[in-house]
Length: 320
Figure 1 (cartoon, rainbow, N blue to C red):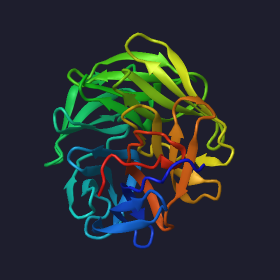
Figure 2: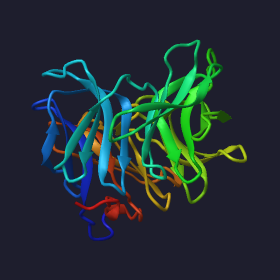
Figure 3: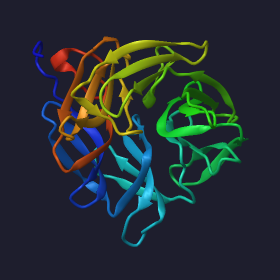
């Protein structure tokens, strides 16, 4: 895989520090996987809901929702804010745990989430004020929608739309659902091919929702581009991935600005926590893993990978 000099970048990663159970932001050397821990941490934290993590890239911060696992705030629900440089930590108490998604709406400086309190009242779109933790309903609940996969979601801030993976109650097939961020109305559902959705990202250059479909928890995957405005889907890439990777459902991925590569977290064949870069165009497109320093469970990583050049693929969206 040698073609060019390696691009060495310090990536911002949200991790659980397995030595003390804290939630913190670290810098990750993309060339080696070495981790340098920042000064700030959320102690006694947390039981995170799968995929309830979001990144405000322009504001250089992560958000996460979870429950304190100990200390004075044990069993309380919190919204945790951590700066990319690992220095600043803030938290707000929440009155409820959203169950389906967490995305940053950069247009309105708010977090977007969905709640599915039970099978009768349906899906409720909500906004969260990051400074107060206040949760507001957007529109009314949609009772005829649907089983959803927590954390498999993405946002189109300019178009004010949230997309998530779901399926009608009792159905076997998964689909990409779209929700209007102004009204809360579920306005489309585009069926996906067979398999299980694992990650999702909105591609603003093409106006598509790109979905990673897993056949099993490890092994073959496909990346599907879903045309959410006109309907239909095409296969962008297929990966045999016999040695890579065990993806954990809802771990926050990042799509490069040119749409050529995906960045996400997973585990290699030895179950070591790793950074994973996947080419998003072509059969058996490039897939590279980089094991990070042991003792850290990677929850999200801010990366870019604008150019997918074999030995140059680890690049970041925000350099520390």
